[in-house]
Image (cartoon, rainbow, N blue to C red; front, side, top):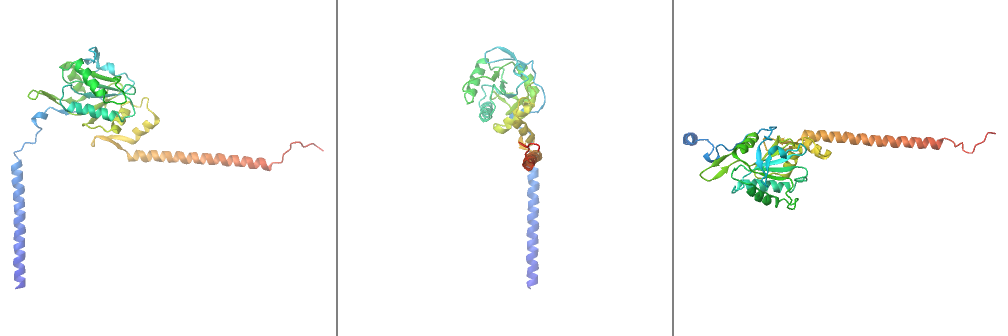
Length: 300
């Protein structure tokens, strides 16, 4: 009887398990059917908005703009071949994202040891042809007021405005894809800053609305291409490399180990040299002490 009861219980359990599996499969199949009609597409508002990296690409030096004084300038005027540039696209009436990017950049620069106008420059190009030198002046003043190191000095800060054709020449060179939303009367665009070499080539893209000061500093060091940087800064570049997956600079353990090995060997070599020099000096002193003095001796 107990055996029969057990069999019935096991059969019921097996049936329940089978039903549960079947129900689960049915739910999974239903979910697949329900989701098949959902398009896996970019929202209409963000179509045509992207960054296509052109690392090493040159910005058009002949692109024509006006500076905050209204003076005609060429983009190449700001690449002196000596120091790198932090470059950013922003338009002056942007209700949110452009200000977030600029504010984040300034917060980061406040914690970077280099100073704008001395070791590097900042160049901002407006993507709105309706912006003017007057709006650029106001935007620059607003941004620089947050840069505590400058104390209001605008040296090294360049805010440029221009026409659609010249703006597009620069955005195409960087791979900055944006579009105008006529319904909202705003530009849809990505969020990033760009670090350029002294000749105006793209050295690094940094994304988002937060830029760790360490990443900005390393990006600027990388953009210098080894010019006018200290030995310590060279060692930083040796130990840190940009991680394209994580979009940040990371410590390279193997390089750190190599550097540590070199430092250890140098330390041992220095220690042995000092000990050898001391031993040599000690032997000289012992030899001098054991040699009888002939001072004052006269032949008999």
